[in-house]
Amino acid sequence: MITMDGTLLMQVVNMLVLMFLLNKVLYKPVRQILRQRAEMVQGMQADIAKCEKDAELRQQEVDAKMAEASGQAKTVLEAARADAQAVGDARLAEIKAEADANKEKRLSEIKAEMTAARSELQTNLDSFAADMAGKILGRGL
Image (cartoon, rainbow, N blue to C red; front, side, top):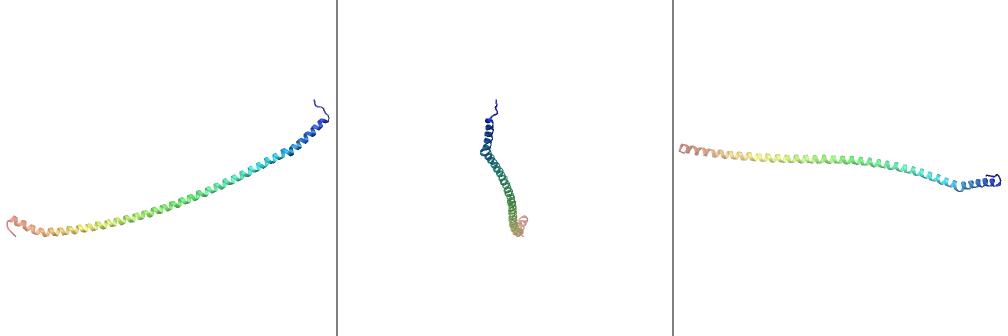
């Protein structure tokens, strides 16, 4: 059983002193450390959020620059294709003109040869006709 004497009072005082000392020596520093850690974690989370936001902004900038570069490359490629098409068309027209000129030259040569052959045949035709008439009639003309 519990008796009410001076030891009880000593025990209560002893308990209060112990609580006071534990609070001063142990609980307050531990709570202070925990509070500092919580503040540090919050600060780090804020820094992480800021870094993530910066990274996202930089990624958007990079994406925008890539899209712009892609557009420029596409424009340059289209211009190069158009230039190549124009050069090809010009070269094709040049080759066609050259072929037409060769064709016309060859046709004129063939016409000249045909005219020469006709005139030669015409001159030979008269003598051939006379020879044939002579052979058929049996006398010379």
